[in-house]
Length: 114
Length: 116
Image (cartoon, rainbow over all chains, first blue to last red; front, side, top):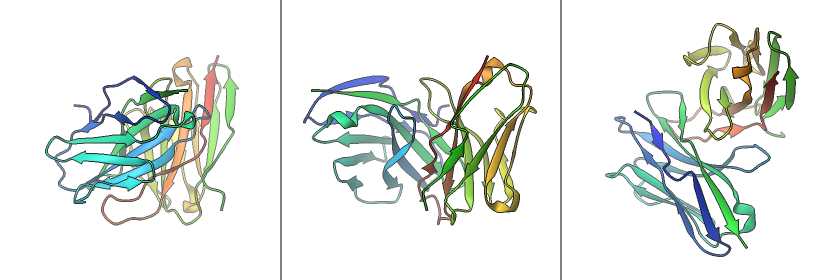
């Protein structure tokens, strides 16, 4: 089974609007971390936001927030007030406490329309 | 400190040749990872070092692949007898020792390999 599933290959959003990128995960570990990365066309992976499995509140970092629904095993990224520079690939990732790997999803390509 | 650096950024080689990539992690990070990313896919785990010890290797890492991290500092990833299927972006990332599962990966800009 896939550890991380991103079901939206591509998304479009109007500039200044909010957009939600979906991510579901699969783990039996009680402790894990969830991460979102942005990869612009230049190729570098840029860390955006982190959510711990025991965190009571949803993580927020500026215009990024993580909608964490533990029972549903989902960790959706919400980008508010989209900007043209947000156009990129976005990857959801998970790290289990029992392992060393980060598992990545297949990514969502976001295009911000002016 | 300028972050994780990788060299070369681009490598074009003929099938059957050997290639080597170098990664210099952030200096205080003792964890180092290699990932492979093909077009339209997410990064796939290849191998992981804690200091100089290679603690985990993916099944993707065939006998033609070898990675080292002498002295727990920089790391090299060598691919012998390259095949066209090896064409990909090779990403290096580092991370400090963390409690439990926190601590994001810091990625380099990647080394793009094209095998002709």
